[in-house]
Length: 481
Ligand SMILES: Nc1ncnc2c1ncn2[C@@H]1O[C@H](COP(=O)(O)OP(=O)(O)O)[C@@H](O)[C@H]1O
Ligand SMILES: [Mg+2]
Image 1 (cartoon, helix red, strand yellow):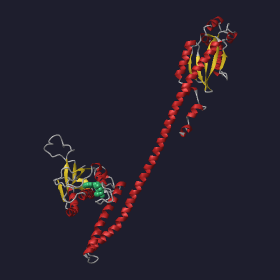
Image 2: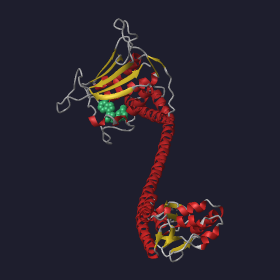
Image 3: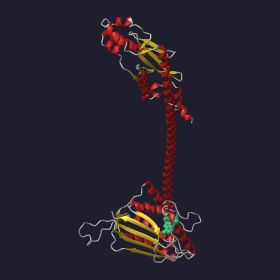
Image 4: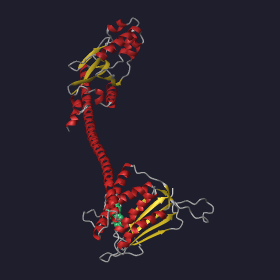
């Protein structure tokens, strides 16, 4: 992980860098505890300063003599100077120094070193050296108003310490601090290592996210290009095809002269295939318009019965030819719905075409329409038994007794270009666009479409092995709004 060692605030900086500070390494509470227990043991004040002079922890109690001197003007000034001197004193290379006070007391200054670097210092004192016998002259000389006997009486209350003891106390403090610093440093390293690895994971995640966003954008762009391409190509194909169909129609009608029966047959085939091609091109155009959201709707009041009758008259010849029974059943006084009549015809024509296509000779296709009152509320609390409920939707079922749709496929058949038998050798024609367009058109009317097997057909059909064909029912529900 090269990125870790290069990142700012990295392990290298923590381990060796110039920025290592006492405050970052140690727990202040631990230092405070050291000061407190030291004070409890020896009764001597102790203060810990960081290298830049900030007080980090202390345990102090003003000495009676200091308190007394603080109340006298000149002595107070001298006290201030001593304290400033102690704070500024440098323990030097040796790591230990002593700073005197005019009272004869002393302060011991001990450097806090870690890993060859000075991080701060400990100031121990004031205390009286054990070998101080007499009150020094310097104390009385500081201020004319000092009462010598009072000063002496108070001075002896200050703790007395022998010089070897001072040395031992210093060493003891140093080793305790060393331990605290070591464990602090270890904790700091661990937390930095953790932080660095979290940072690295975050960076990797961001990188992957970026890549994903890029591929998503690229796919969207491709999708847009595909839709544009579909729209352009379909449009360009439609113009010449219209001419081909127009001319073959003229030929059939004998406008170009009398035709031989064989010629008539060929031209009929040209027309039939041409119509098929036109249907396909129209589907492609619809698909691209639906994808780009540019399909225009003409909403009017639509009678479903008329729509289904038109579908019936379009498909009846083909049904008769194939030997499939074709029935339409519409409930009486079915309410009209708001919708685009042409688009609704397209929906049911597509579904009925599929039903016919996937149902063998001897089978049947039924278009059944009725009102749905299931979710409507009664008009008011009184008398709803007397009045019929207001229907909430119109339901159209397209039922067939054909090959059926395997259970796992019922969601995917609504995807564009998806066909259950996707092989190039498949029996039935089509591009797999019909249902994807149907679903979107239904949804644009605020409706839903569902598919299930035809469980209870009036005239079931058996396949070659004698098994009953499952059949299919598409149920379209369009709300009255
Ligand atoms: N009534 C049906 N019976 C059996 N399978 C059907 C029926 N309707 C649709 N399917 C399946 O759904 C697929 C997709 O239908 P559709 O989108 O209309 O495409 P296409 O008719 O061009 O194949 C069909 O290829 C077929 O596998
Ligand atoms: Mg179809």
